[in-house]
Picture 1 (cartoon, rainbow, N blue to C red):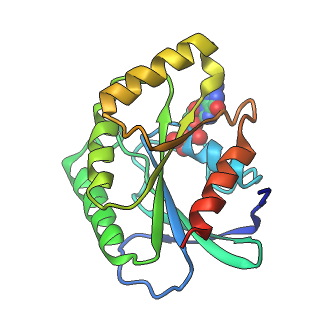
Picture 2 (picture 1 turned 30 degrees about the horizontal axis):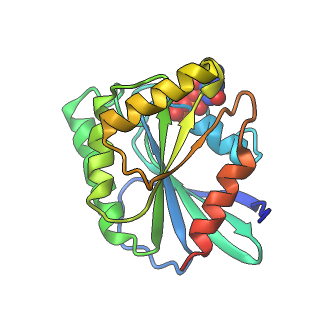
Length: 200
Ligand code: GDP
């Protein structure tokens, strides 16, 4: 399989999620702030400024909706707000939780999640909380590890084991090692996305 997404475009920012009537299949990206989510989205969709990199803490919490063509079908993806340290006020954390809950409960066309994990962080409690939260939805989860250029091969393998242990990852979970900086594994990620979109 060699599928390349085309015509990718930003649709809108969603601040309050109400029921959305779209028949287009959708997936969403999630990750801790600074995990490299914007860089990876730009890399995968071959776009310099699709998702903004280096966003400042304290920005408004919103879901950003994008659309693209794969084969002859249109699909959508959602870029969710980075979680973690910038959710430093209870009010923001609550807004994030409410927005995510509404989204997960109301978006029937959501097919799967792509959770981004920094390969260097072997004991991230926030990632564990997020993974537990996603597991409850019973939808498939793909994991894209980011920033692998920062570590040696030996250290990558060691960290993979530690992270899998810490997060109690299912051995069947599909994952990809990526680096948007060194442009590693773009097609592997795209194939996995396409496979999961075309599945049902
Ligand atoms: P986001 O907050 O998750 O959207 O993360 P960004 O995409 O803004 O990236 C956060 C920081 O990590 C920036 O300084 C990026 O330049 C850096 N970064 C992102 N991806 C990579 C990568 O693959 N390798 C390295 N070495 N740095 C990266």
